[in-house]
Amino acid sequence: RRPIFFSRHGQSEYNQLGKIGGDSVLTAHGEEYATALAEWVDKEVKLDSEGKPRPARLWTSSLKRTRLTARHIRHDSICLPNGTEWVQMRPKMHRNLDEIYAGLCDGMTYEEIERQYPEEAAARKGDKFEYRYPRGESYTDLISRLEPMAHELERTRETLLVVAHQAILRVLYTYFMGKPREACPDVSIPLNTVIKLTPTVEGCLEERFTLLP
Ligand code: F6P
Image 1 (tube, protein in one colour):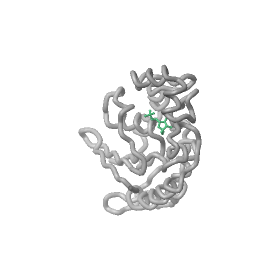
Image 2: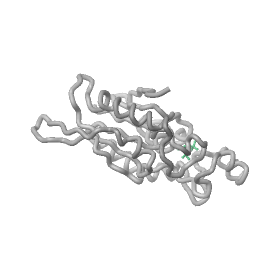
Image 3: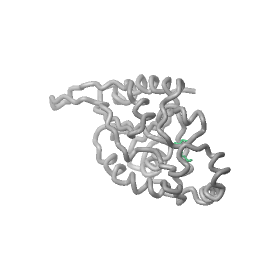
């Protein structure tokens, strides 16, 4: 059964500054990850375990940092056993994959939020799963936003690489691993890492590949 691959975008300027949200571009380190990812995808995503080409799709969010991360991945056309031609890894952009929206706190660091909105920071610490940013979103909102997409992901017959964001991938990962929904805000989804989930009869087999130190 075909695996699903998840990756965060490469390091963004906001990541470097410790700011949340926004729509910043990649740092030099983030660019390095984008290049490394394209090379890795050629070997590990486009080819199956026997080294045969396999049809693969590529989904990104609509934000610059994921599109820039995916941009070096080459679109290849491959011949399927039924004689048709398939163009694989042509990026498809989904707004539903955009990062959790922090509303009033968008563009701030966690320290700035603590200073300017101490009650908000305390409320989030108290219940990160249910907490909704003023004029923004909560993890429960993300679950509703991503539910149709999770079903589509399950139905897709080709291998798929999703290049998205920390909170988004926490929700999708929790769904595919069959973990309780409330666990999602604490799942570790580091930068520079591809997570491969392969469905098995007992659930998903998880592998993690760190492409850059
Ligand atoms: O810091 C990167 C980021 O993707 C932010 O844009 C987002 O608000 C945050 O991670 C989500 O993680 P957490 O829910 O732990 O704040």
